[in-house]
Image (cartoon, rainbow, N blue to C red):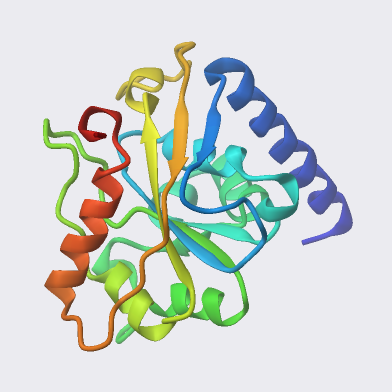
Length: 216
């Protein structure tokens, strides 16, 4: 990235964060962990295209530089604007969801694990796709478990986004002004000898436990 493009990306990033705070009054709730620059994987519910910017905007500026959202290459490379915002503003780790678009034998987890090896933190959506159902969460894909097994010392932080679906309903371009809360819970880790299904159930329960309607 050239110096000029890096400068432009920083300006756009600050503008996105300010816009998100202005429109949604997004409020971070660091309930289970402190906002400090440790390597983490923030895993969140996914109901809207606004999810990732909401989490990213909640992070202190110093943390944003090292936290990389994992995002769909086929979405963020669709046009020139997205191809600038995704890779250069958000510094996304891009993964193509289309098997036919990947090189032969290419592992979609490789870029994610490489980013962690380089010391980055991540934002991921373990449901895989936006949840358009009435269920609070879709079943988690195996990626979160694979990350936890490969990097057992990295905190996996459940991150619940509340009200984004109302702010950015499907098909809408202009956000509706509502208050949005992003709640960061206590981290989880894959326990020794814990199998995939048991861990994903536990991780899902930890995330769901942050949802307002099921809090006790």
